[in-house]
Image 1 (cartoon, rainbow, N blue to C red):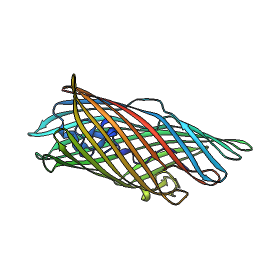
Image 2 (cartoon, rainbow, N blue to C red):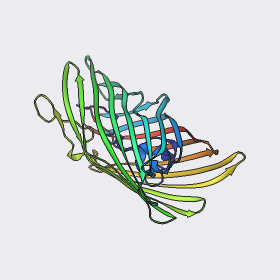
Image 3 (cartoon, one colour):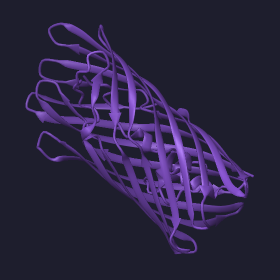
Image 4 (cartoon, one colour):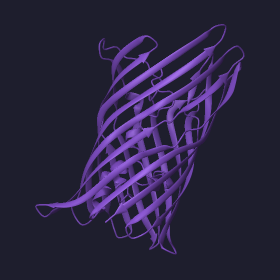
Length: 372
């Protein structure tokens, strides 16, 4: 059973916002605005006053090509409509017993978008479509513990649903439908430390948690619980000069120990989704400029991700990507734009024999930030 053919399991530890996308997620130490609710809650402690933001994301174009079986090859093309909003957040600073605190609240959406395509073989054709995603309501609290040390915690209240439909045409016509609902709570703990005026370090941990799932496959309905492991990210930001900064992150989550169990029988349920460890490296570079009405911030980034899953050639499944971003900044508001490209082979399917897949994706993200 595939709970969601296009889902990556580590969405909780992925934030929202164009700046993080433009830096290829090398933002654990660099984030310092309301987007910290998703990237590192400690970064929220930089805020003085009130700040709000929203983000829209679009999947512009993608190609998924498959090979590996002598009788099977194919190529899928898909596109996704604009998710009108995938992040709405607000944060405000206040004082309790002379201690400065910042409280934030965000609604976040991790949407797979509408995806569909066809797979052809010598004696069969499979058409599929997948819809759905996960949403989180994320209250956050952060504080500056000392002049150089900040800490924060986020409670992600998760809820999601997905549907995967396959129409298979061989000698007869068959339709397979899988529906999934899931919910749970995941906690993020983050710190940022100013090692010097030029160097800042950041750490975020998404604690182990359970996801309650209800799914229906054809006529079979089951309730299950999935355990999610500890996810970690370590990063730094260093000022190369007063106008430019270099940042880097290392991220890791070992989903190979994750279990999915039937709540009624206690038996383990086999699922190819998420049963692997992932490790990734992210690097970003940012520099400031000016324009007629304010300042700009320009950025680009790159990342490399490897999982413990092996493809049909017994090689680790990897992903590489690059990104570009730009911000137009005024005293009380800013506009952010980012484009990201990635190529991966992390998907695999089985029709008649194992096959590997190469996936190309182009995304666009737009954010608006306001503060006073």
